[in-house]
Amino acid sequence: MCLAIPARIVELEGDKAVVDAMGNRWKARTTLIPEVKLGDLVLIHAGFAIAVVDEEEARKTWQLIAEINDFDQTQNKLSG
Picture 1 (cartoon, rainbow, N blue to C red):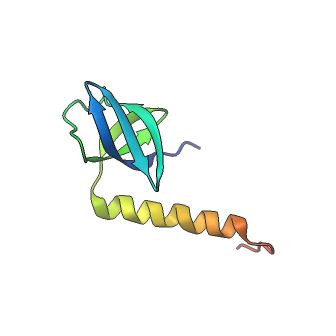
Picture 2 (tube, rainbow, N blue to C red):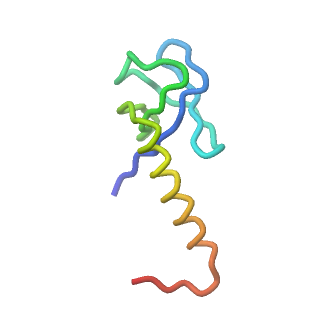
């Protein structure tokens, strides 16, 4: 399974960007969506911005990631 992560473009020069998701930053390319601009929220997959997303959807995904992380940190894991 593949996962795309929403991230905000915090630096942009040509098609080279630095993106931030939940305080984590990494480099990404915007080649596939050249119309993006600084501050946009995009889905990042395999180092590429693949779609522009809205703030609400990004926040929902970040919340789910935080919940998964919280669950992973629990001592007695039970699911299902």
